[in-house]
Length: 142
Image 1 (cartoon, one colour):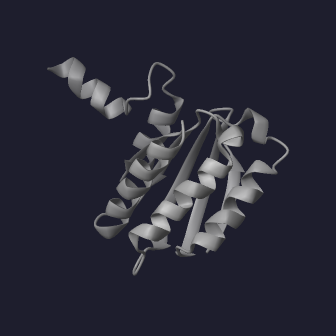
Image 2 (tube, rainbow, N blue to C red):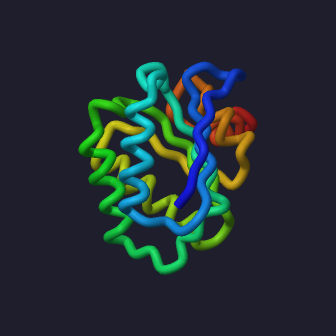
C-alpha cells in the first residue's frame, strides 16, 4: 500500500492521507507509525483518509480487527481524534463500516465513512459534535 500525507491549509489540524494499493495490516501499522512520528502530529485533530484507490478484495474481518488493535496500541497518540474514511461504493464502504465499529469499540477515536470527500472534510472540521454534518443538516430539516 502506498500513501501521501499532507496537512491542509484550509483547516489546521487536519491531515489528509491519500492511499492506494492493496489493504494489508502490516502496511497499516507502518502508516500509523509514520503518522505519529510526524513533527506536526501533536496538532492533528482529524484525519481525512481517501481510500477510494485501495483494493480491499479478500480482506477478512480478523484483518479489520487487527487494525483496531493497532490503533488501540496508539490510543495515547490518537486520543479523541476524528477519522473520516472516504471509500468507494460497495465492498470498500462495507469494510470502512467494519473499521468504524471495531475502532470505536476499542478506542476513543470517532470514525465516520463517506463516499464524498467534501462531506468528510466538513464532518472533521465540525467542532460542535461527533455527529456527521450531513446527519445534523437532515435533523434540522425535519
